[in-house]
Image (cartoon, rainbow, N blue to C red; front, side):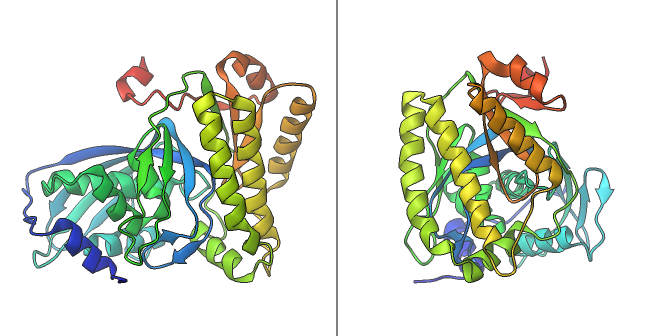
Amino acid sequence: MRMTKQQIVQELLGQAVQHASTQQTVRCFAHANIALCKYWGKRDTQLNLPITSSLSISLGTLGSHVQLQTRPHTDRIQLNDQTLPTQHAAYRRITTFLDLFRHSNRYFFDLQLTNTIPTAAGFASSASIFAALVKALNTLFAWQLPTSKLCILARLGSGSACRSLHSGFVLWHAGNQPNGMDSTAEPLNTAWPQLRLGLLITSSQPKAISSRQAMQHTVTTSPLYNSWPQLVQHDLVCLQQAISQRDFHTLGQISQANALAMHATMLAARPSVLYWLPDSVKQIQTVQQAQQQGLPLYFTMDAGANLKLLFLQQDEQIVRQLFAQLQVVDPFVTDLQQAAT
């Protein structure tokens, strides 16, 4: 049976008491994540239920920091030290999400968000924001919910937020139930210390069309979309096998091809959706030229202009020479203090 967001929240929280100390300040962090096999298309747009499963890798210590406490009268939201006006789209989206948890106690919140990745630029910032926010609410109200239930709550804010509650490789199950209770994420618990990600920031500006809008437009208008679910099913099997066998070439080839296939569905939409910029194309060509010369280097792209590179630690210096502005990420360093040393 299909449920509303509010019914799902009530089902998960049960009889949990909604009391928070007005003096308590909660600080939480959630990893940004990059999909290797993409989430592109929803079977339920209200509950953010995906048409297909997906597989991601976290960006190590990059993501969203949240500081949360209660306050009187109205919500106040700061993003990277800038107070958001009430008419701002991000303010409305976050406060609408918070409305799910106010219940009879009309709590208002003072929320400070700090992103260590560009916001709304194809780095899944909304995923890490809602994941960190749900973790903070869980602590503030002492719900003591397991991560499997937090995944469902975070997904109500942003679909891929369920993947940001874990680190490393994460599999998000599409599920079959109309209420989405079986659509949750789990870590693969497979570390790959030699694997590296490289972030190429072509543009840090917010996208002209949001991922949410582009996704639905693609599903409803692209003649190529019908083949997407079957392709994802194949790619997921190949990627999980490549991860278990530490087969980097297969991991890179499938991730790159899956990203290009997703963008192909967007290009075929009517009218077309194109996120790439001239610099994006130049970077793709540089990667392809390096591949032809035998360098094990691959790329993936989400709904944005920015490339994320996949390579091994042993090739890091060569890759840095190709891309002077590259930001290298070790996806399996998740301790913030360790990363700072």
